[in-house]
Image (cartoon, rainbow, N blue to C red; front, side):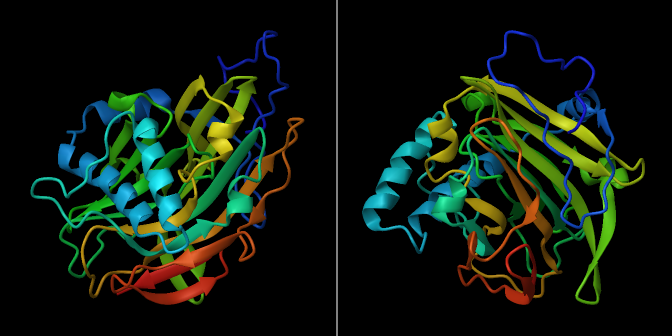
Length: 328
């Protein structure tokens, strides 16, 4: 954001010259104004009923994603799995939650190449339009997530969560929070009317929600996670979540957490006849070791690769690698 929000002025105790993240660009027509809507979104989240099965399944899926990752050697998988409990604050589920689904997979999605995953110093930021129909359609009878991370190992996932044919929810999972506080935002679809829009690609129109997800350094040992949504009705960016915490640069740039860009995260053995889902306009920006932000750029094939776990999804189109839509 180009202007600090009210109440967020930087004090003279900071040891780093904090610059707000530049507004997303790279061909995106978007506003240059912000509003702080954290109180509103926190209030709506308090009204939501937590789902322990969904929360356990989310973490089981991450462990399964690592165990089945095609480019990690066995020793690397073991090392990453050993690190993950520290990241979430407790042991990972080894089996599906009671009454829950197959523990995760990637229907289709983008992962960052290792050099690009760690290719930032004081900050990284992600923007994407999540292609998200109001119902997933087809045979979806468990969870299906449309999620992404901005590369930071202690960043956030701000994502669309489906369960069966219910209306989806928008959630935020913060990897930097203590064990009992990872889940921060949980919004009903009925609360998101101002944020839903239409984006055209390859001759088709898709319902989307624009998500801006940032992690950047405040001081030598303090970092900030932020999530903003594109408010299409008011033509502005709405800050919906912020968290400041202690971390090292090595924790942010190293490890496996944060290595997935936009992915369709699955919880069934197979999918059939689903509505189109995916990601459009995926772009990132990095902040270097002297605190300067670069330029927004669309995610390319030299920075990332595609993973699919043969869950039944078929590719409708791929613009390598910043946009894809899949169906089944």
